[in-house]
Length: 129
Image (tube, rainbow, N blue to C red):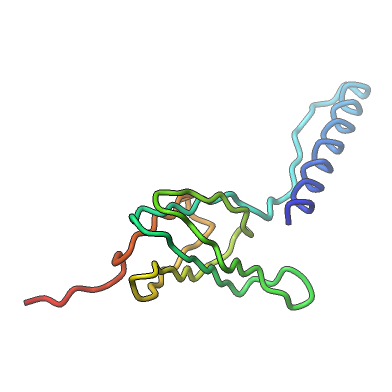
């Protein structure tokens, strides 16, 4: 994914440079052209005092029916992990500590939030008395 993203950026730079030279030569107006971005940086943050295991599952295919799932992320206590994920996409994020049951949240990469803060018990509904 990173090589694909770098290739898109390099192509945008070359295209804009050629367009700038052509617009200066012809005396026309220069407009910046950029292709659609396919990836977004997000941050997973472990707010619990215990290590956390995180799995992110999506229905977005990368190539040849291989999904863009991110599995087996080990986050130490109070740690952050930066990830490059497809944009736009919906992820089902499953996480747990060694002492808690698995929890689940849904996250979309097309919103403005870039940080996913995780802590044990954040999705468990407490019964009302």
